[in-house]
Image 1 (cartoon, rainbow, N blue to C red):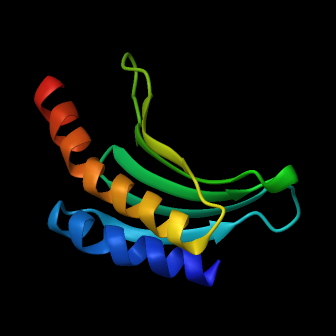
Image 2 (cartoon, rainbow, N blue to C red):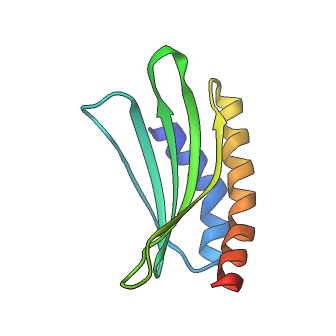
Length: 114
């Protein structure tokens, strides 16, 4: 968890602080498999959520998504930023780089389109 959280923070902190996000919040499931480590940032009704998933048979990947909380009559909406293999530290860092770079554009697109 320490390595994933540190790597996620090193990629997302500056970008998301500039966009006025609070965070990060970090946690992991302790008693379930697959093991999932989470890092989340919040701003208003939107959450940036990146996770490292370690599952059976070597299924290891980084998943990042944006979640807009909806209030009636608007429904919640989730957009996947990316989901990339993370069998090695290099692959994990590369996935985090890619996701962090894509996040501001997706947020701006959503802000423009409502």
